[in-house]
Length: 107
Image (cartoon, rainbow, N blue to C red; front, side, top):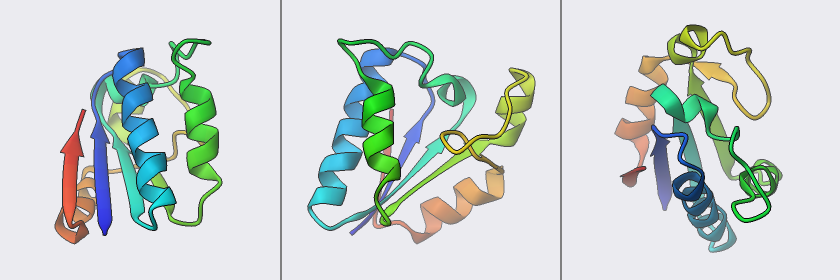
């Protein structure tokens, strides 16, 4: 299955759970793409021992079945730079991701 997860919040527990789900799906053999939009481009800022978002993302990015894309416009608004954990893309990338996925989840 090709799963798309759209993160639009920087709420630590929500993003931690979304990434846990993404990693579980990958472990089951699925392909998972995460698109960051709005506040979602700041998903990692509240990573903590309790909600280890960074650890979940590190695990996610190790898989060949994982992809992450961030809305460049949303990043520019926040004066945020492109990075491995938050690579810039556009709204057309989001559209293509939705069109090509079997399931789309939003958080």
